[in-house]
Length: 121
Image (tube, rainbow, N blue to C red; front, top):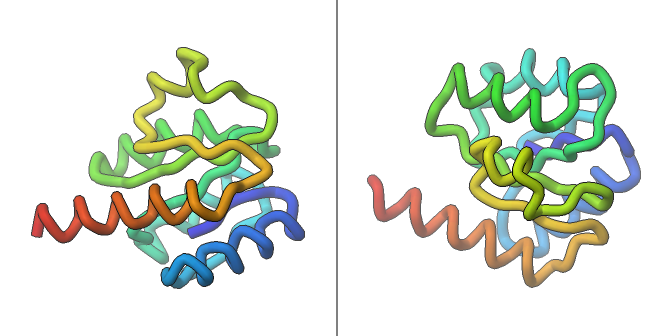
């Protein structure tokens, strides 16, 4: 699942995900509340989640998703928030990628999460 309020960036990120050998199941651009509402519908393996969004920012969304599904794998995506900020590191996400997204970094995160999921099965 890709969640970013900027539709163009979300579409580019979806293309990068495909280039990394994975399939995005949906793109949500309506803000954080929509992400929370639709998470259960799609039950994604990974959520690529923008931090700066309307109607609940990514940090709030992360907390809400993890409270409902402690196994949710959330990767923050942000061009404005420092990945080492305590709010980010303490939110429970499994990773954080800086915008502009580097395909190799995205591939590394997605592959790592897939390997961890397979190992846990």
